Length: 393
Image (tube, rainbow, N blue to C red; front, side, top):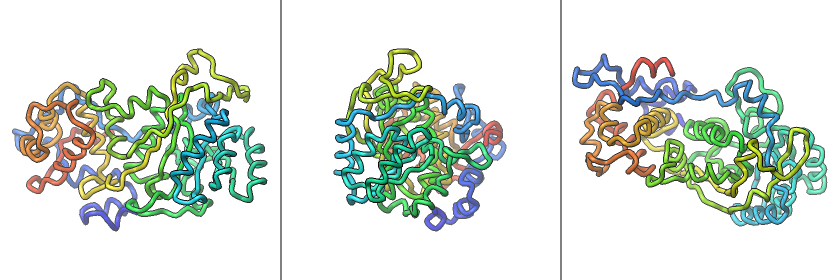
């Protein structure tokens, strides 16, 4: 979907469908290709290039089916959430994808607002009850055995329910792709898996920047419950010790709003025995003994530009990862290790002093740095990389 709007030098890579195979070739160099003064390694704390992780490792997937899940069982909370979403819908009939609705308390509240709901339920025992709700709502509820958080597995082979490919799901629902600059094609509502919140956030982050999986269809909006702990990390600013790579990448990619803050007691947990019960204060459920934030994550229309695209996004990921590998260092020192482009010239263009540190930069500053390097016309090679990075790729 991106090839027609890309610069000519990137179209071939996009049409190849890889999105990650041709990045270094167009604007990077090994040490051997550079003059002696540029033969420098990465900083001493140099972390490896972020690999595209296998988020659906078979062993972890099988364990995930046994993990407890949170469900909205407080009717007042369900009605409040439904009212919030109704006020933000473009039309009363806007399609909502609800992830793991369980007993269907929130599902009923959403249906009462007039919304059309597709319930993606990963646990078979809840499906008969959800289907019974659909019979009384004039076709406005469709129930599918599917785990939204394991959509588009990368482990290979044919996926089996509740794992599904987004292409199959969206085609069956009649959802067509929209241009990135267009409207929101779909609104998703759910609860991040409390045992794998950070892992899930990384999965969606890769899909978003690569315009793959659900983001192949446009700027899909996530309306999700997230733990207080992960929310604070997600929204940390440059003055916080929690500020890290994930904070930067999500804040660059999305407009993130708090819609509601609720106590964890508003949720029940489905145990391995299939029973709903209040969470107990034990180690296995420790992450939910906090407030839970209901947030809206809307991808920015202006995320992609001439110099930041779904083709070179992982170079952007690596640049930020490298900088936070030694967060107390000056930006100029990181630039010397990352690029042959003149570091002082980069600092002048982004209007930063040579004393500025990584932790003094806001998320959009990192994007400006990346785009400044990518847009440098006087350099044949924009990035430095080692053989270890090639092997990772």
